[in-house]
Amino acid sequence: MDLVTPAIGLVFWTTLVFIILLVILRKVAWKPILTAVEEREANITNALRSAEMAKEEMLALKADNDRILREARIERDGILKDAREMKEAIMKEAREKSAEQSEKMLADAHEAIHNQKMAAITELKNQVATLSIEIAEKVLRKELESKEKQQSLVDSLLKEIGNN
Amino acid sequence: MGRKAISIFAFLTVFCLATPMMAQDEHADHSNDSTHSAVVDSHSEAHHASDASAHEEGEEEFNAAEVIMHHIADSHEFHAWGEGENGFTLPLPIILWTDAGLVTFLSSEFHHDDAAHHVVEKKSQRFVKYHDKIYYASETANEHGAYVSYDEEHHPTNIKPLDFSITKNVFSMLLSVVLILLIMIPAGSSYKKNGGIPKGVAGFIEPLVLFVRDDIARPNIGEERYKKFLPYLLTVFFFIWLNNLIGLVPVFPFSSNLTGNIAVTFTLAFMTLLITNFSANKGYWKHIFLPHVPLWLYPIMIPVEVIGILSKPFALMIRLFANISAGHIIILSLTALIFIFKSLWISPVSVFFVLFMNFIELLVAALQAYIFTLLSALFIGLAHVEEEHH
Amino acid sequence: MGTITGIAAIGAGLAVIGAGMGIGRIGGSAMDAIARQPEAASKIQTNMIIAAALVEGAALFAVVVSLLVA
Image (cartoon, rainbow over all chains, first blue to last red; front, side, top):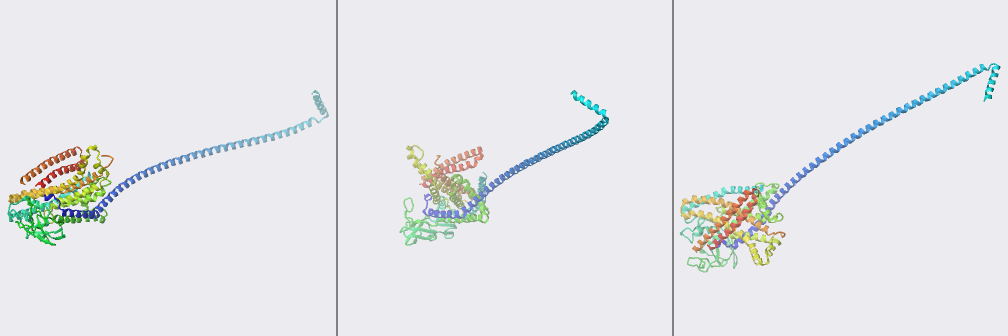
């Protein structure tokens, strides 16, 4: 019976000692231990998270690089295409210009030739005319050397007029 | 799973480290007992029986039950070895709250008297010690020379002053507190020194703290609230465990039966009761006083639930007390076999079984600390009823 | 007094038989459950210990009653 009757003294001392122990241990042991453990756990979680983030960042960076590379390639291709087009255009233009110029030169030449020809022809005509007139003068002078011949001419001319 | 395995491993390590030492002590102690008593004669077991049976039993038959009951009970002096005046007994202070106020004196003033023969007079009041209880002495001695009067069941009828003495159990408790602080203060302060890395004793304590936190507090109380109760649970776990272990060491400054004392388990269980009910929420009280049952069941349900509040910590109290006391009783009974059979030749059997029981008791020491803490956490968790689901 | 003590001892013994059977059943069932679901072992173990502790508590009440009587 004594065994199962709590003794007041022991209850008192147990309460006192246990509460003091609880207060001391909470301050000197549980708090530092649990704080350290929690800090460590937080560190590990953070480290894992930052590793994950670094990985993601790496992936993003890689994707970015790829994109930049792709864009650069596209740009390069564009530039090359432009250059080619420009070259073609320039060449075409040059060709056209040269053709035009040669044509123009040819036309000029033709015109010049034509002009000179015409000038020559005119001169020739003038000379021929001059010569003909001189010849005609000479012929006439010869023809009209005698009076009878003049008379016959006047007659014939009158006759002609009279015929008309 | 991994953490569980680590905690179990930590426990096993503790046992393996602790067991050979304790076993050795036990072995040595019992062999001492047996050899010694073989010399002095079988009835007076050196370790247990000296002050219990010396006066009343005299040269009578060895009374195992009385010796064992005396040994697991509290005492006002700490008997270390030897007998009577030849041995060594640590006198402990006796502190009484009497009609004339506080009275203090050392237990050695009773001169090892435990049968109310020797009267100590303080502040014009007279005290006797009878079966480790302090009584006001009767005016005159009875026919046995004892200053007490008995009822028909041979129990003293004298009035007792309020006894706040530093008894053997209080002494042992203070010793355990010193030990806990010697372990825990370096463990706690080592983190600051080593930058949050457990080294030395902290490396041993930390898995246990984590075990209490992750396997006891967290799953039973819940993620949001467990931190508040963790200091109590940790303290109760280490307090019970260390005191269980101290009770298993059979040599002088240890060997008390602190956690097998109903007053201690009562106090611890009462603290759990207070914490459980003061941390309870509305849902818990609603569950008790407005349960979801038909109205005519209320006269049955409410008393049952109210009894439930008390029976849970009551079971905690009885469980720890009975487990530890039973363990001590079995070990002492096995030792007592030598004196019951009055033969040295039974001692190998005794020693073997005591050794075996000590191994089991090492397990029980940790298991009971675990169960007390686990059930405390469970009760605290149960006192927080979510109102949505029942 | 002697008779009562004897009866108390028998009562304690009976209580221990009951508790032993109860704890045995709990342990056996827990083993079965763990064998069936090894991944839930830690949860089963905790519940097993709680149940065993409760059964044991009942037995200890009987022991305490015997102590009271004896």
